[in-house]
Amino acid sequence: MAKGDRLISLHELFPPNKAFKQLAAYQIPQNNMKIGLMLVGFGGLFFVTALFFLVQMVVKQAIRQYRFLPLGLILLGLLFTYYMFVLVTNMSIFYFPSPYQDASRWTVTLTSYLPYLLALLIIPFWYFTFKLFRQSNWAKWDIGLVTLNLLAYTVLIGFFVYWQFYF
Image 1 (tube, rainbow, N blue to C red):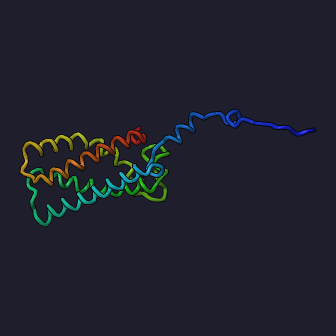
Image 2: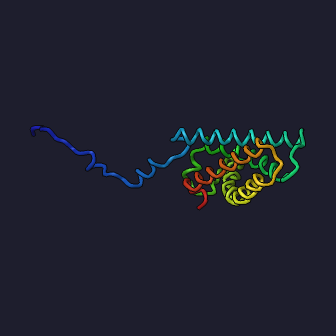
Image 3: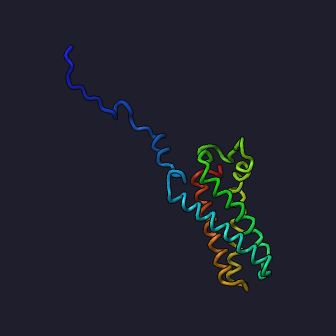
């Protein structure tokens, strides 16, 4: 029983697995710092926008035309600020079917419906943003902030499609 050199190829023992390669390539905020930082930045943008338009409406009462748009931005901004926090801190959302159900936190379960709300609101949001550019007496800073939010929401829809939050 002489022992000789014996080489075993690991590739023969563990052949490449297509499902594992897909799982390893799946990008979420917890394994891709750029996506995580982008979501944190979006959360900050939504919060600052909500505060900005809240101050504009309550303190200055400066916005008269399209008054529903700042109200919508305040509400969406606060909701999506929390949702960005949920996405960055809760990994299981990305691996379970949508809408995600969390047994311990009902707020996480409710936020899992926000991608559907955003899908419904994005076309009217684009429409009213273009109307602001054409026929509005809003300040350029206000229009720029609305446009920046619109672009962030559009990027989020792209992420939601990639993460299969819609089906």
